[in-house]
Length: 276
Image 1 (cartoon, rainbow, N blue to C red):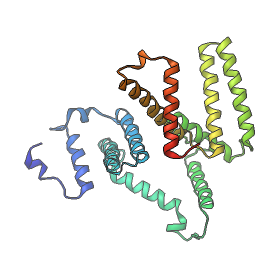
Image 2: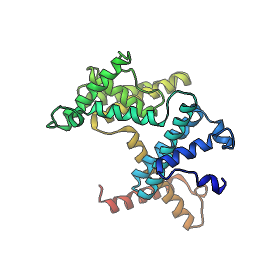
Image 3: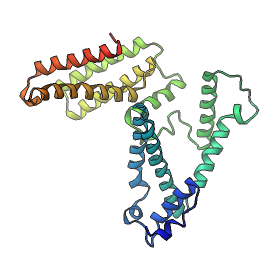
């Protein structure tokens, strides 16, 4: 970008970012790639950036988090610019709408309701306000409004929470555990006797109930699986490293040796954390 054009940029950080996006989308001299994008093509990047924000938080990498939040903000700016070009909405209307929503959903802060409420009561009030909002949108079903594009584990959890609010839920964890045993048996039967499509269905049923068990135990399935992925990666890398120190690859080892190295990695982690 020529220096004289850059000098035209506004001074405020947000105004400058909005200006940059307008320049990138300018048919006269903009970026060809940015000009080709639309809501659908940008959506996967938006999801990816949100996950990278979560990853930086999980790693407690605060300098990285600053950058990832900037990347996520850019996605909102990008969608806002596309919306402005189509006369649908713009960044200001996006910000105004979420501001209005936050004020409406916090009458104990911005209105006359008492602030002397527990977090649990505020959560119930929040859900009641959201239910009223769904009713205004003609979303009368308990499951209406749960986004289709959510990660499957997250969407399963949201569907189950919605169903539980209207009483469709197991009251005891033992009943969920019994259902897991039942679904595991059906999956074993499907593996031996049914088609691949039926195996897929039974596997999905088992995953769905596992999410439900997590909900009853206070475990968020998506976060728990991310943690399990990270643990697997650490221990697998330990096996590779120990074999590499011997000048060997995993292909030159066997399962018994790799299992022993896996157990050694577990022992190291338990020693570092004091876990049993």
